[in-house]
Length: 330
Image (cartoon, rainbow, N blue to C red; front, side, top):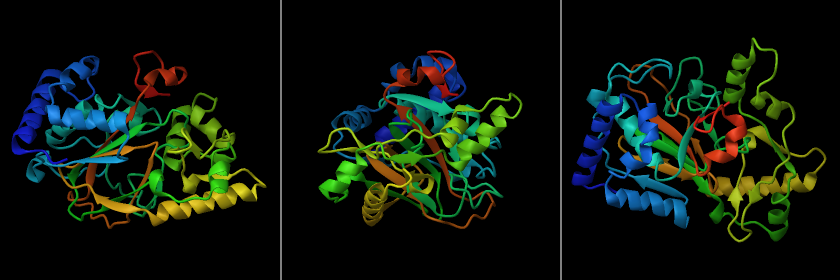
């Protein structure tokens, strides 16, 4: 979807007015009224987001044309903890937060960026080799937070800066060709997915002084066997993270099925360049995503995206949140 000039201008003005009224993209006052405020977005965009959610005709949605002024952004921060020098990026955080309201509930993780609801995706010095949004090596494709039963339904990436046109790779489960036997095996709980290193690193920090392990650490030590394909057999959903998963020990049939699916997803991988002003919405139940390797300069001009995750049902994770209204999973 390409925004026209009037829609782009309306979104920009709405985001700026919301930021003036509430002060931050994750302000409690904004989150309380998010669905009301979000309905002030252009009707055509609302319809596209709602249709993406309900019809499941497409596995990714790209919205282009949000005005992003590179000069007003200020330099790309060197760390997600570093506050941006200019407030302009917060305007775009507001737009991203508003967009999530038409897909479900925005949420965060205590083990990622201190529970922030909107993340900065940017290279961080000394983390170049990490399998995360802060690395510069190839980020292997995966289901977002695939190890967790309450992983997101949708992942949103908003481009602020991408001078090098670093692509995001996507591949959908609808395009894979598998034998009936492999599909049957992949639909059975014969696979283990462990937490990625970023979740684990922050989990260890959170529990360093309390003596009891974090829930994420327990998922590392005793992962629950799961199926890779689930939902309707004619159009199944997908849960996979090859870098952090394996078949159950001693199950060559599961290993062969996983290898076949991995090869099919790799064959269907398509590059999407998230340019400034582009919003990429990924159905995390139907698409894997990754990122090509690139060279960071750490001079303020590196790739910079904003990221948010959305669940269609926040209630199902209640045991992992402090209160019904809390949006951060512990």
